Amino acid sequence: MTALEHTKSLSEISEETFDCIYLAGGHATMYDFPDNITLQQLIRDQYEQNKIVAAICHGVGGLLNVKLSNGEYLIKGKSLTGFDWFEETLARRKREVPFNLEAALKERGADLKKACIPMTSNVVVTGNLITGQNPFSSKEMAKVVIEQLNKS
Image 1: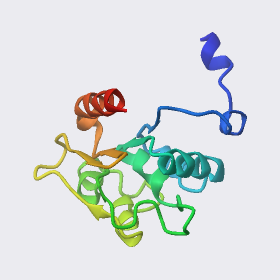
Image 2: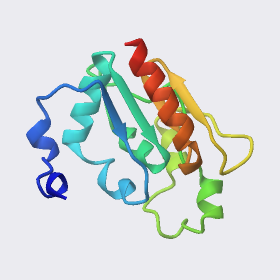
Image 3: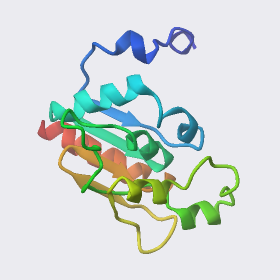
Image 4: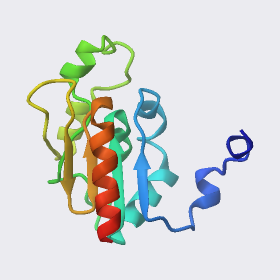
């Protein structure tokens, strides 16, 4: 509890370096992550330093507005995954989310790779970008992130 009570803000850690930035999922991330400029800068710097950027489920929304130094969206032309619209329908949350994550990813030029069967594990690795589709991808995602960290 002490650690939680003294958690630093993103602006307080923006000059630090990390082996991996991992964006957790959950519907709240769709409100908090996409327009957070500090988070976007951290992710851009991490990615451009060839360090791991990982995101799972709705946390992938945190990648939407990240622009690289060349002005291109980080996700443009990249294979990735995230919570898709059909899964949102199955979860009965379409009316509660602020936007359609699947459509937004595609609008930014991402090559969305969905699991053949909804609500099953799916992890996509594209260079130092690792994404997981849904909560059922958590275990596989952890294994892949650990494997990639061990390689670097």
